[in-house]
Length: 231
Length: 189
Image (tube, rainbow over all chains, first blue to last red):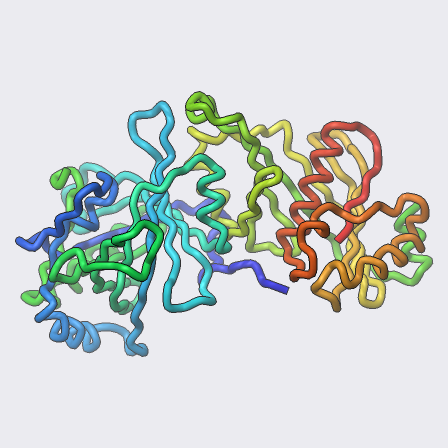
């Protein structure tokens, strides 16, 4: 009998407010020409990072700095869904599936608006809800009234250090809607993201994140990106 | 009476179980855009404690983490929880050889609305292959109340039975009970 999906960490009873702390690669000159990308996507698409030539040295550095684990790569297809109501801003959900690992469940993610103010914090903080689901997720979202806004393929490497997660990946544009075979890279660079998902109020983690980011200089400058600045 | 009959058969009590179902209305915000006011059901089953099942009538059934409940809170501007419509079935699990029988009292708010009986034949994953066996077993303790073949079997043909199929049956049963009062109906897997 098919087992229902189970998350890696069955921690919450739905009561703990989980937050994502995020630092991203410095916005350089090679900003991807993300035509038609929704505003909510900007925090990812608007960041430049390491050029392809420097990828190996960054990976090498990360292998040295991070937990000793088997190098892990990923190839994901992400679809961004919007639900429009009478409110000004639509409700955004991201559905992600792995294209190279068939057995893993689909991943549904909600990201809230970044918390404003607090200049002392070193990372962008926003609410997040992660849900593992069965593979009929897209049908279900459409049934709920969502419609797909855009999609892309992300391919890259993932590293961990404690609860920090570092992803180095490249975004590919999907040339024909729904066909994840025909894709083309969006830019000549890789995005670098450092993030932590932690219960609300644990702002100490942002200090750890900054310290870690320091160690990646000058290969990549991880910064707290203000999505509003990119709009 | 059912429990007594089961115990007479030699079935052993094996803990408790619970299935609950919450109803969500599409808020005016979306339905005004020409969509019909669909109902969405979010269900839990103690047999799968880390999961959450979200269904539409005659629509897809999504199996998700229990975290899905948190998402529904975020979505409350779009989907409103009809709290008064929360319906659940709680009762005892019985084990009899390879059969698992769950007899529960269906309650909606403070009032009891009926009795649900779930029968599972554990060694088989293809429902059509063991339906006759299930029916024979049910007749032994339910007599004339034995139900006819559930509609999910019709669409499944010879494919593998999944937890989602059980939840669809509970949803249909709960909907029936909501509409017609005080009539015991049985849902079978």
